[in-house]
Length: 176
Image 1 (tube, rainbow, N blue to C red):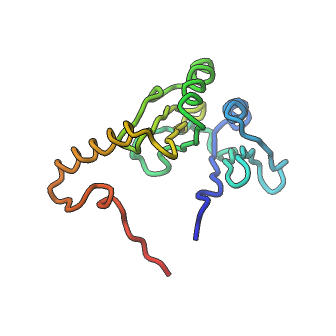
Image 2: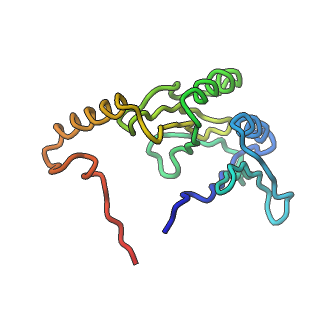
């Protein structure tokens, strides 16, 4: 049984040496630790959240910038966990705006995603889409009520749904 989620993600970026300082500043601001491969077998710089997950940045063979487009094949975006909404607001003001990062969606609540879900979306210096997101372990009654009402309205648009959207969304996966 899995309990920790994704182990790591490797991202190939153009102009590795030029873009690496951006990732150092971004992940450093967010409190990550870092280590590199020292060029042994391959080149990659890792940003770590101990004890279990990390993101690797490595040089791409092509120097073409990434061209983000919603729903294009491949990874849509990478979401990082924020401690709270304040961390997202501070990151937006003190890092994204100061670094002149292209912000796709300023910090805001996404009440249909989950009760209390709050995030900012942006493109990095390589054209990769990122999200810094937070949703509380225990949402406020107001956030839960708002989410529940929005789902109820969505159900009205779908007469084919026999149960509440929470149950309609759950999929059974094959097990060995």
